[in-house]
Image (cartoon, rainbow, N blue to C red):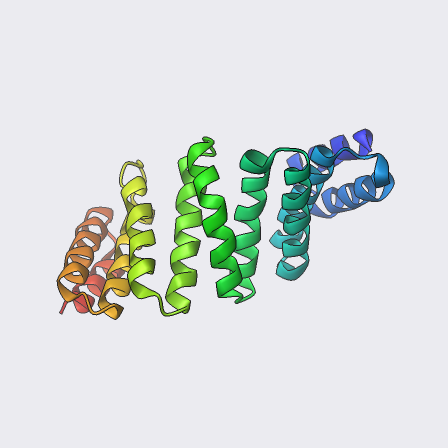
Amino acid sequence: VEYEARLAGLRHHLGDLDGTERALRAALEHGGAHLEAVGRAQLHLQLAEVVGGRGLAEEAAEHALEAAHWADEAGEGPTLGALARHQLGGFLLRLGRWAEAAEVLESALPDLSAEGHGEGTVVQTQWWLGDCLSELGEHRQAAERRLQAAEIARHWPEQHDHATLAHLAGESLGQAGLAAEADRAYARAGDLWRELGNTHGLIRSLRARA
């Protein structure tokens, strides 16, 4: 199992995703009951990423769920388990299972924020959560998540995510009937699109404000 796990890492580093997947599946198959919970969680999480990258969201969600379970068994819920729930939420979102995805992402967010998983992961989780809430018609809550993500992204050197999130927040605020707040969000997005030289984004934000 150790050999196959190392081989999977090397294959992934070389960009051989088919070889990575084969090695991960072999490691899980050969590990059986002898594999420690944390090792099983890591293998399932890696397999979820690879399978999800091939567009197989349903199988990827199953592996992410297994990873979350085994991480909890190993006492790694706030660290490895939070990453697994983050991935699971993303795959459920891709499957259109909005309510399930929102529940999973909300459960992961406190650990992701507290355990130093990185701003990128927190922003992505908030972004996905905003998308879920928007699909569920919870526009005010969706706007709140999108604005929280935008506040983190505003400090990043690359401002495209900040602009996109501000624009999405404007959409949610408008759908929630909060016209003045929506106007401010679209104005913020417009300024960012102008600075980025993104004419298409600027026109969209100006049209939305109008």
